[in-house]
Length: 193
View 1 (cartoon, rainbow, N blue to C red):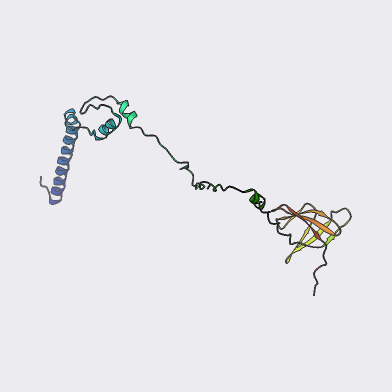
View 2 (cartoon, rainbow, N blue to C red; view 1 turned 60 degrees about the vertical axis):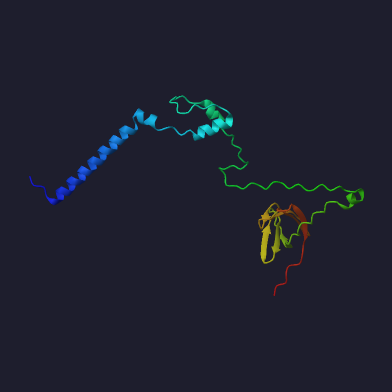
């Protein structure tokens, strides 16, 4: 039987792989034997440090397989987490700042009254007419700038103003954002021309 050049290279690669496999099996068997475990000393630097800290005695290089619960308890630390929830993407509110306590003299008490809140902004609607037909509710014509609204009592216009009451001379309107009520008097229609 004659082996060609190509088969020779394949044969050599196969022999090299078999030798490597044999060496790895021998190394694996040798490192898992009980003699190898006794030959390599266990790392006890961490255990010795914990024992020294807690005042416990440690036996080194003992093949005792039992769990040392006294050493485990000595190594426990208490987690002191913050008030932040790590599972939510929200920022903590800054801690409230305390105002310094300043003694108040009796003559200053009268001067230090809380400021009155500013009045709500006026309602910029103009009432220029109404319509009433028998059997139908009164309709009112209101304008704000170039926008004209036709509404009945109880309707909300411009997503902000609620028509509360319609009279012959005025309309009572409530600003839904500020709960401010204002009567709007009947005005002359804007001149056309």
